[in-house]
Image (cartoon, rainbow, N blue to C red; front, top):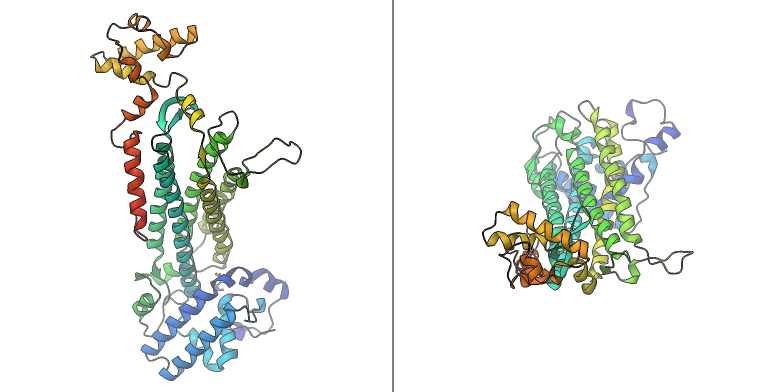
Length: 464
Ligand code: ARG
């Protein structure tokens, strides 16, 4: 068995089952790139502060470079006997450059090292998540341009309520997703403080230049309290929470896609490559992808809860429980990124069934509010207009006709103020185009907003 770096005070070797149970290499091996970068920055700082010579620094850096190549090519002899990624890297460096390799751990501990590695790794994944979100925003805005004037049924209580433009609905999804992007940017800025230099828990007695390491590793600041720095995992929870919000939004989008694809709604078509058949019913074309995204949101919610429970009883400072955060957050991130990506690809193939959307939007007295507003524009108090239109709807229902099928004589029985121009006023086209206030559904608004989104997305990494 390899000699453990911490085994000096032990007579016995670690029990094999304990090793098996406690090793984290199988999970934290993905941190090797971050671990090497952190070590590079750390040794440069050690040299600047006079703890190692220029010559030693050079040798260590050559060793780390070689190590990175070996690891990238899958040629590093990883072993769980060395417990985790940090000890594997250190031991491989010693194998490569000899005893000098042991100097890299001066002025640091695995406690501040793991916190630094994980922050760097999560920072990269946050950038990937942000990129995926921005792709989805682009898809939604592009479709919103295409469908900015297409009439679509707007629902409340899952009942047809008022006509909207399909572009407006797509931009409603876009709003949810762009809030997610903002949340991710916030998490990224919260994450970006450097824990290294906090050592085990109380800091280091050696003179260290923490600001220099922070700069080299792209952190905005250094942490202010060594005890908090090694025990803080708030940023992991923040990220997990952001993922739950993304998945909640994707799940709601999925629910609508499932409904709209349903032959009873028949509002959209999705490319067949994104649908699946049934093993027994030959006619079926099932929406498995959105169903899976809706289903997977449950495990991402669970990940958030697991993290909160993991942390709730921990005394200061580092406790080995903290090793368990990685599995949970990695799963949360994997599921979220793959869900955004697949939903984006699916939505790209979406085709609106314009005819059916129009006729659904034009049903269920969807412009009754417009008729009430028409009366109010002629001086009737809205409460009274509401009452009059309620009576007209009742009459139509009884006679099985829609409002635009009524003659002007039938209309005027309810109000003398109703004139011939009413027919245009209660058309679905007029209904949507008259809603011009900021945030309303008019085609003009939708086109303008969708184009603004597309322009803002062209600015690389710009926050919304
Ligand atoms: N594998 C450990 C983790 O992920 C690294 C830190 C170990 N520190 C310790 N004191 N045992 O948390």
